[in-house]
Length: 127
Image 1 (cartoon, rainbow, N blue to C red):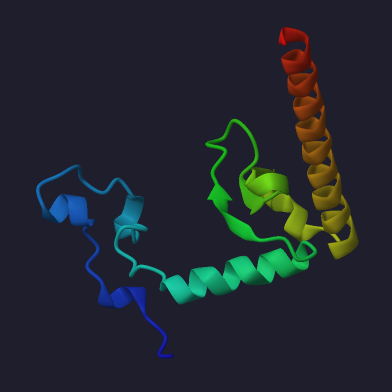
Image 2: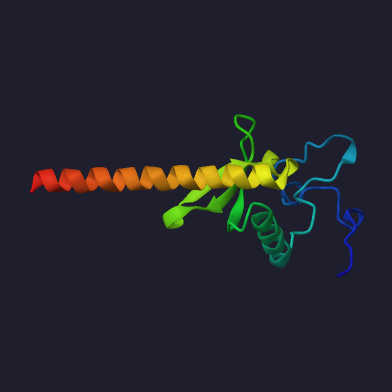
């Protein structure tokens, strides 16, 4: 695959070119809007790689923390639920990352089991 140079793209954002809000990057910087989209195959490969690093879970995406909480990696947990771990888990050891994911999955499974048990007992009392 050929590499792509950002210098080949105009320095005005697509919004500015269409009469929308102007790019506010200083000194003629390149906006993320100017970059070509990342091919879906590349995104999927990255998610698979991260999932394998985390112990074989299926990573489904990323969630920004918007400065309030750390950015998160989203992965599929028990019963198809979506669980999250901080993005920074990738900078530690693989063992620590896997332990964190296992603890998240166990906690989610426990919460699900407790909710199911509570619901069953409530239904039994109602009958």
